Length: 86
Image (tube, rainbow, N blue to C red):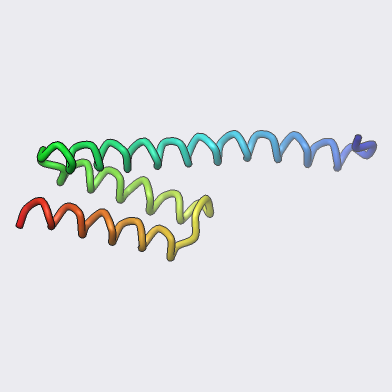
């Protein structure tokens, strides 16, 4: 257990940040699943793609995921979206 005040504060900060990061990760995954559901059921998923892309970009900016992972996820989503249109 931490004994110094600075170590105790660091623990409190880590707990808060971890909870926020987990929430952002869940929101990102939910947006991607919503997009995937729309694509698989032949619905128009253009707006969902924009929404999910914005959330993915925000996650990369905040450091939740790496910027290359964000680009890869968006690229694969865009590929699936174009396959349904063509």
